[in-house]
Amino acid sequence: MDNMKAISWDNIEQDNLINGIKRRIVTGEKVMLGRIYFPKGAKVPSHTHESEQVTHVITGCLKFLINGQEIFVSAGQTLVIPSHEEHSAEAIEETDEIDTFSPIRTDWLDGSDAYIRE
Image 1 (cartoon, rainbow, N blue to C red):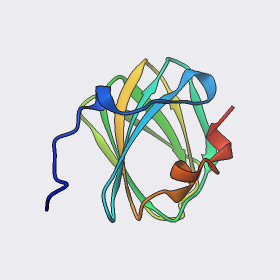
Image 2 (cartoon, helix red, strand yellow):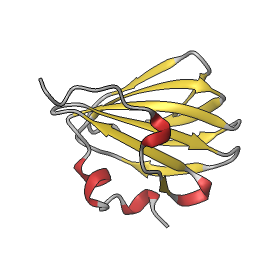
Image 3 (cartoon, rainbow, N blue to C red):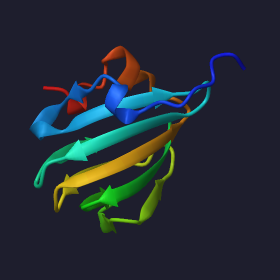
């Protein structure tokens, strides 16, 4: 492939979202990565999506609420959220994490992800 190249997160445009959350996105043909920074206390409201989600926390700690169950994901841990599963998240600490989605979250690309935008 001619278009294969290494990408630095620092060179990707940043989205500024609710509660001081910041997001950068990299997409392939069938999978998407989102690198997300949460200030302590920032919350992502409850939502669902078609995509299966794999969240890996680099630093910090997130509390997810999935089907009424609290799940804490700390630095070095990974959580798999099945497709169409309603979930929310709260940063227990300042957190840097990467979300992987398949299929690609088109709502993130076209700006229709109103639940997380100001």
